[in-house]
Length: 111
Image (cartoon, rainbow, N blue to C red):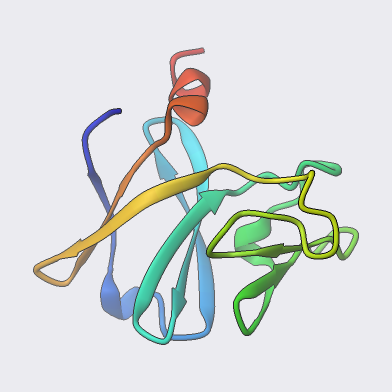
């Protein structure tokens, strides 16, 4: 796996919200669920909709384009876990949110 990359300050992503950030050329959706941060691939597998712009409902995010819902923690589609979006490792250091891309997204960053 690659290195962690700082993408935002904790204060830039309030609890219950998401944000889209770029990590090594890949768009990632970062979410704050009650002070714990998670990150998933920003592209909905249905039609590429921006999950980081979706509505957060508990631990789920709803794609703003066609309404597909994904669990932010697991990356699984709600009601049909055969569809998943890749998850990223996230850590918070000195008030900065840092992300490390998984192998399947690192491949995208090298293209």
